[in-house]
Length: 393
Image (cartoon, rainbow, N blue to C red):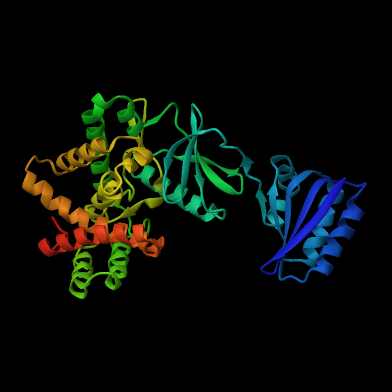
């Protein structure tokens, strides 16, 4: 038996076929499809066969006749068995056909990371999946897969996604990470390894920053930061806002790679090797922009509420502060406090700019608590602008 239902959205008629289509029911199925076409004016048509278990040659002829009436026909979500029938018969060369994504559940799975675009779950000892928050995440997933591939080809040790899956109403990328642990989890379990882990963390960051990329392969972080600064023109005193924009615009274009969200939860240890994950933020630019995001991860976002360090990073705030301080000293290759503080100030300017913009865009100005937080960060940003004239170091 087969069941035919439909919906129309933005002019596209989607017809859902389930069960089986064979010689015994093909005429009835075709009649039902024709009823749906006649009853629903449309500009395009999709046949969704996610729930179709079997199709015979009689069913294929139904689709062939439908395609003659609807040249724009697309077939989506074919199971592996049904897709093989389309391939063997040559239908996949005549009609756009996509395979269904494997479905998995993350219920009860350990959350090992979370970012702006999704959460990372461990689904078994060997495998993790990054589940995207956006239900229409396929373009983002394919973009991240391409960014990860480019980084890997350039010699960056990255975890490469090997599968796309359906997770509830959204999608996820699956990575094979055999018993890997994040650097954050290692430090939380073995705090005595702090210096060792931070050294590995900084070594990988230096490798990333020493890698040149083609400008067309990754976004330019400088352009993003300029937009952040211009956003602040409406929220800072005029002279401070213009100075901030000028300082960011004065940073030269730089084609060295950046991760864009580089913190301890985005670096995994597997068999003694550091592997980078969460690659959707890969970009190129001056390292001051990377250091700004590093500052925010360990200090900026946790500066008012220290418990955020534990809930976000899984380590106490005191440890997060140590990670920031040790990271900066190792990255700059100096113990000179004046030099370290000089670079920290520059990173903090960009970091606070991002935090304030993020808070405002999330409607923080609508609450008294949110207003107080924004004022807290604005005071720090203005103070930094008063004593700095450049973001370069």
